[in-house]
Length: 396
Ligand SMILES: Cc1ncc(COP(=O)(O)O)c(C=O)c1O
Image (cartoon, rainbow, N blue to C red; front, top):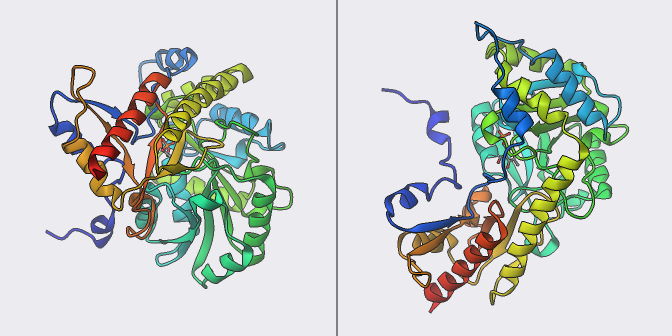
């Protein structure tokens, strides 16, 4: 039977690639640094709201989300980007659906999306859904993953370019773009007639200075979209509630239509999201404190490994590290399938995400891996120790 080219083109998630091999290895304790699924407990207020009685019928909700959930998200974002209200917010099934809606709303088949690479690998999948192509904007670990100058960006624009999409803070880089850099890129995109789509699902997790939201850049109200999510900030990946936010009301009308086509997002999840959005500032401070301690532990451990260089994350909970090996796909698979350290009395190994999965061209990033600081410090230290032992054994 026929299966569409789009379905054939969807990439296997680079992050999940090694999972099958992990599942086959019985009796081994794996320290998993390859996926962004934190183990931080979901706040009680969210769990309580989820358990609330919804009445005798689980009814559909409105296409753009419950009004009170849109209000709560608008109020939350207005703390940093004043003047937002319900009409600027659509509730989506996670940040993922907000990204998909943005691409479908802005791109016709064959259109192009500029994305600084390395980038969150699922952007490829959403673009394939939308029939669009991701065009990578090269950045490098040595330059702190900074966005290249306007002159370089100019060379990547074609008549099919529709949007500049970036994550801030970045996954997989942990890089936070400074306000000057963001304003410069926003001005460049505006000059070129491009949408600026800021994926801010990690915006609450920063270590030095809070990232500027793209919603808060004056003079850019008409061409900015922000994607947000409850997944990482509230350690609620399974809630599947996200937001698409823009001050461009013509666009928001179109997004409402996309929402109608799939009916509304789950009301119960939205009630839980309201509880999340009403948490006090102290909650966010605690989250930052937890991830800062983890990221510091991971960085300190990595610094002990000879020949390994890395970018110290300014936000989110990932780092890209460069290893003294030529093929991290092979190395990562070898760690899962063959490498075992038994010094604790039981076989242990580590799972990392190979770098090429975060690049449009899989020949790039071959000496890089992404590590996620999603476990508590002692486990991260042990995971990096195992990585070091693995490196020694693999090379020697
Ligand atoms: C940069 C980035 N954007 C979006 C998402 C999607 O998040 P969700 O659909 O869980 O909100 C993720 C998930 O890891 C991510 O890392």
